[in-house]
Amino acid sequence: MEKYIVNEDGKIFYKVIGEGKPILFIHGGPGLTHNYFLPHFLELAKLNYKLIFFDQRGNGKSTYLNNSKYINIDQFTNDIEILRKELNIDKLIIFGHSMGTFFAMDYAKKFPQNVENLILCNATPMNLSTLGKMNEIMIKRLNPYTKDLDNITNTVNFKNYDKDTLKKYLVELNRHNFFDENLVYKLFDGVDINESYIKNFEFINTTLLNEYVNLLSDYDISSIESPILIINSDYDFIPIESSLYIKNKVNQCEIKTIYKSGHYPFIEKTEEVINTIDGYLKKFEI
Image (cartoon, rainbow, N blue to C red; front, side, top):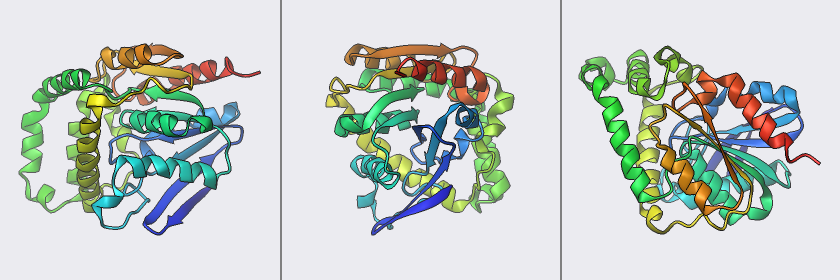
């Protein structure tokens, strides 16, 4: 099932696959789309889970009025609540990836009664010191690709938003995110990369990340009551300190490391991630 929720300030695209316990997937970026989750999580639909994917406002098939006041963390978090009400679900299992983990935790803080479990995959830093360490790692990882990236951005095709050139650039930009670089192409399967995609990503990414960084100095996650599973990777640019910080701040938290994988373990180690999620959630069945 694919539908839109139409609001006065835009529309939210969502897709539902399967029946059973509802898992809502929150993509990262900010500024990406739900597409990179597919088809890697479809096996969960065969294990009695209802999979709910959506594009955050301004991303992919979701839209927003051309006004920056509609692009903020509160609005993005409230969109999750709007989606929950639309689907008439009492309690959600929420899977957040990368920056999507921030929105998952923000939702759990604001709507604790509506969250059953949180699964945080490659959890974004929740304090400034870890964010600084992450940025250092990312810069170091990107350095070997700088020359190739510059060669692409200096071309006429790139400046004219040629689709093939844009995709080539994004593939090169994301190689460092994979333990096995040959799998980087799977990140953009089924994604229409064009001028609109790039401009929306740049605007939303910059706007939300600035707000996120400003919040981190006193953002408190200790009030989160939902049980949490953190899935991290041994080759991620996000350091283990990010996971440990969250674990030390909340009451119920487990950490699972997926080895020989980078920032997208569900692409590189799909079966292991599926089994980890299913095994964790089965512990809460009555």
